[in-house]
Length: 435
Image (cartoon, rainbow, N blue to C red; front, side):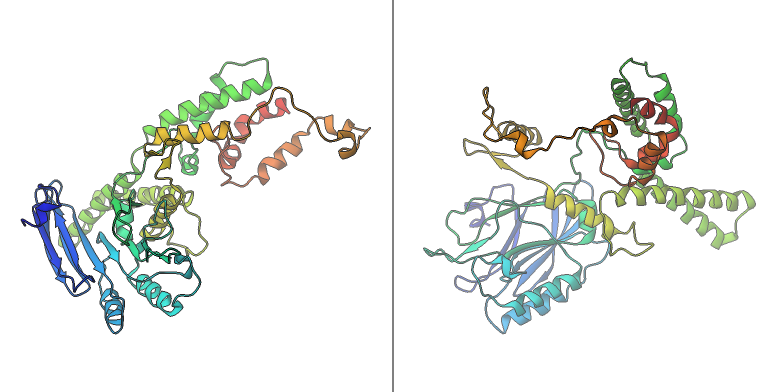
């Protein structure tokens, strides 16, 4: 412990390790027992598995710290050891470390590599059902430190599917490489994905019985304006404000479903003990009917966040489906941006400000543009323009709305095609008058 405190903060008071052999191998795990009570479950030549229990809320998760060998037959033994882990569907488990394998030939900056190793490694990952944490900001984690270096990604971070549900905001971030030939990495773990303040119409809102009442009351009470375009814009803005306030009062679907399952489980237990009286049986029927409605809402909610054609009927609300939606967020999110002074910006407001400034100055500006081409040669004049200014027929507008895809991406006001389809009988007169 005295040696550990030469380089680790004093608050880290517990550790376990696997000794290195010369300059190879070796794994060290250090933790703070006042935050997490750690118990070593498995310690082998290739890695150490520690079970952590939070002292704050008793949540349990596992960490497997890995060091993969470079030579045979140890590499085959390592893969067999890795493949034989039993990852339960309900477990939160993270695997991390230097695996000394890469998943694709694209994980090297030079041609070559052992394709058979990538197939073996990917097969083991697939058998365990693990999810990869994408590396943000770098492509490789190891260098041979030569003038014309060989670069590879040999360090990997994987989690169980259940981890993506309980800790969705988990990121794998690179740090500065000072002396080692490996890139130091940091894993940040969070339980909540930050939500944007912009309005997004949720398709499952249209399934609720009180949705059309909100639209009807808001659309008819909004003050009329002389300009038709301003009139529709004002009504959409007013409706957006009302729907945002209304959606905050909708109960949490996950909590409602969990409570219903608990009540149904209790009634099933009573039925096993003594049977159910008529009121109890009726209550179970009502709850089952209601939970089907909420499950349909939940399916619609997640379908908007992850579209895949490999999901079979009945599997739309499984943990895999929710996990893949979380993984899409991880891959698309921007963890940090470097400003002109070389500093890394991590907060959302700072990143948004830099992107907005870059967008504004991308095209530049000029006060006296010069036209360097002959417009009359590029565009042939058309004399008969009557067809372009003819008014739209109501049948044409109705046909366009009917053909709009229900899952079309939201427009500037946050509404999509499904909103127009569901509420067309309420809003169509304003659109007719505008057209």
